[in-house]
Image 1 (cartoon, one colour):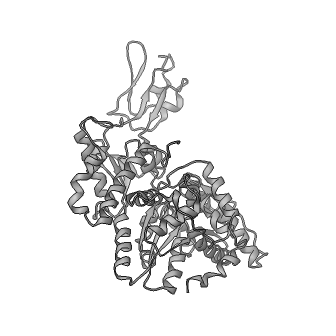
Image 2 (cartoon, rainbow, N blue to C red; image 1 turned 135 degrees about the horizontal axis):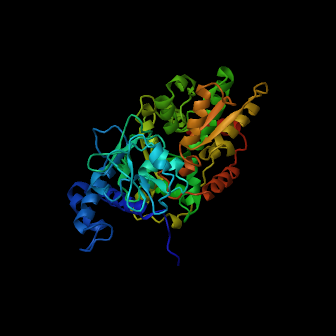
Image 3 (cartoon, rainbow, N blue to C red; image 1 turned 90 degrees about the vertical axis):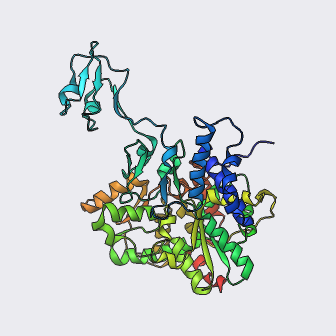
Length: 480
């Protein structure tokens, strides 16, 4: 039988193993007395497999345990750096490669205003790092492309330039710039950057619900879940969530249907709008384009909109969002969303919860989800929101508005669209901003990433029983 591959990378698998063991002891109520055992469970024996020595490996695992338990309470960001794990990447920057031919032109020297370029006895160029300001002019003029810019993976992944190097060469995150998208988390080859986990909070909610029966715990699952847990069927994943102790499982796609209807009306009323579904994109607009902040849709995200409805019908309920997004962990702590959403975990953490209870979801009979329309479900990929707004305008009989949607695939595309909008040269009146490449299916908390995920989401959308947005939203009384 082929071995089941649940994650893209070994870094994800290591992170998952720590979460799984922390969760296992938390379910048992014995976490405090077993904290010191977890590093030896994760790194058994005396031979190192990842770092210089087994002692450093276990020390890094100990730091991962802290993040699994909620991380630094004094750091408002959900993205944190494990300093002792961040020491294997070269500093990088502009460097001269072996492609340098020692030419006569010396254009690199002429263009450098800091005198950082020198030559050896073979006329090969060298860069004095103490003088270089990383402007890149030398690389632009080199006829052999012999000067390259070698950035650390985390720096390359962070398109908002929130990552710099500390005095001892470890990564530093500027919380004023960071949008908590988690791109650095997924791309760091050493797993030195991680998102805080609220998995213990979720376990507490479920355990206390079982103990006193005073409230029900609802799970809201993001539509991108359809592209995850590829070793099982989607109905089995739903059953697995209920087996963990959740009262019921509801599609966040239903919240997307709700948002599509109201966002379309808001767009017609205001004439220009940027979407509010992606919290990382919303933070980016507020940080980098504050003049455009008034144009952010006043609608809550699908997560918060649906949670608000659940709380209105069951005020004592607890609501947990399960999705691919690390930025959702920031969103649910904001003033209004915090009134409706009690916690957030990622798909990585959901897998850890399954396995912490030795729950083989492939053996479960399965429970179908049928809360949302095709249009709500395709919010998970780039262009889905725009398609839903088109449909919403149609269903509401608004045919006198010329929608010009600008779907943005990744934060760099968002930057271009927002820059044009700020200069009033954007050929569009609705910016659909997705911070992650591909949309939610590219989120840092996904088990797997890839183009196949888009096809999975579209197929899942087509399986929806509700064929229109209004068909889906007309059955909201199901919670009553």
